[in-house]
Length: 286
Image (cartoon, rainbow, N blue to C red; front, side):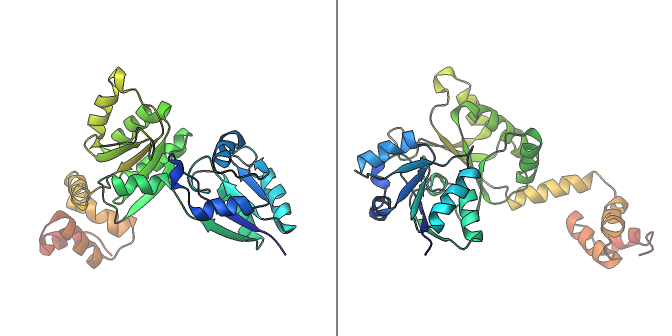
């Protein structure tokens, strides 16, 4: 019988945040796969867990996954842990989990700390609907595509960032989302210097421009989504720059909408009487 892959969440700072179940699973597992064994050994020693460890990280995630799956298929139970938090969230555990599921190997989550969720609930931003972006892509084109998509995102946005890239990321987000967009900068969650700063991109960049405020520690950015009012204002400004005929053309010619539907939509978006828009629509054959 095949073994089980346990996804064991570990503390993101405060060691008291580990669960009783997590400690038990780590003590019972045949093998612990850790993102950085040098870092994880401190955690295991603290809880007196004496189990063999092996490394599983970004640079060996495919080849090592095959090795771990072989062990699972032979009946070993493996506990996967990341440096801090929940495996599979912005770490290579996603690859191993996907391969296990494809091969019918049981995967069991052992819940615990997640930096993004802890930042969200204490941020003061809306928690009703949110989107997790993790770390923004390093590749310029992919990053620009993400930023473009986030311009009209109405849900609260959660982004991770390292201290040496924080200011650049704040600048890029400010340019894409607007310097007055609200956000909460969450730093060193659950640790001694845990900090929450509710601010705007403009104010944040001014704050970090001061030498004594140089970024230190790990960051989570919780960003307010674009309001429906802002979206409507953007649309209104866009329509004001084109004629009614050009507006209709976008829907009738470019999108294949019927004349009746286009007239209704344009009249709503421009806040004009239908008869006024219809009078222009007679120029179109459809």
